[in-house]
Length: 333
Image 1 (cartoon, rainbow, N blue to C red):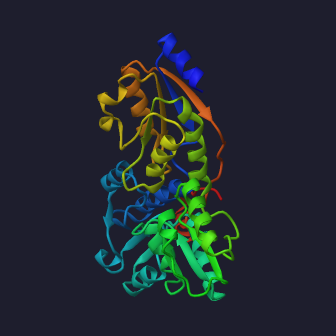
Image 2: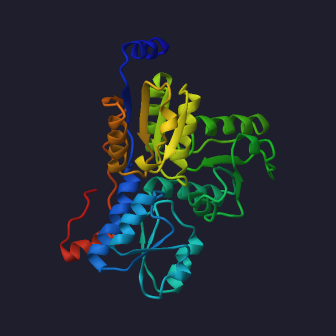
Image 3: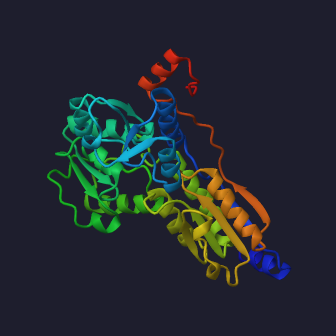
C-alpha cells in the first residue's frame, strides 16, 4: 500500500478512492420514504418524533415538504399523524402516542426491532442484559426501554471494567446497531474477562450496512493521505467511519455534512483522497464533495467495492395498507 502511495505521488496524479458500499442503507431508505409517502397520503403536516434519520440535509428536505420534527410525542396535537424514527422508541413512547390518539407510523429499522425483541425475550428469561452502546443515543434509549430493570448500559471498552452485575452466571450482551465492530468486540472481550459465562446474542446486532461501510473504509484507508466521511455529527455510524479510517492507516480523516465544510488546509501534501458516507447520507451530498475535489485537481475517481447490497425493507404495515387503499405506489417486500 505504501508503494502504491509513493507511485501515485511520483506520477504527480491526484486521485480519489471512492468507497462502496456507502450512503443509504435499507433501514434509512425505508424511514425516509415512510415520511415522504405519509406526506403524499395524509398531507402536511406530518409530525416526526426526533430526526427521522441523523442527517441535516434529509431533515431540511422533509421540513420543506411539510414534515414537522418534534422532540417528544406530547408536542404533537391530539389525533395527528406521527412517525417514529428509524432509531426506534420505547414502549412508553408508544403508550403515550396511544393516549393522545395519534396515528403512529413506526419507521423503526427492522434490524433495530430485532434487538428490541432480543431484549424482551432475554428479560422474560430473567437474564441481565449488558447493552453496549452510547449513552443518550435514541436507539439505546429505545432498546433500554424494552426492559429497563434488566438492562445495564456499557458505553465502550473502558466502561466494561466498572460494570457491576447481580448474577455473573446469567448474562447476555446486546449492542447498538451502528457501533464500530472492532470497538464493540473489544468491549465484549473485556467483559468476558470479568464474566466468563457472558452469552452472545443469537445473531449479530451490528447491522450489515454499518459493517460493510467500515470494511470498505478499511480497504481504502492504507492508501489514503486524507479520508473524507460525509455525514452529520449526530450520526453514530458516520463518526465511527472517521475512527475506522484513522485506525486503518489513513494519515488524516474528517467528517463533513457536505462540500461546504471541506477545508483547503487539509490538502497540503495530499495525493490520494478517500471518500465515503454514513448510512443516513443521500448520494447527492457525496457527488457534491466529488465535484468539489475535481475542481481542486482530484478528478480521477476509482470506486473500491467490497460488498454488494440489495436488501429492501417494506414500508410500515399501516402505511402500506393506507397506500393500497388509495392506490399509491408501495415499496415491494
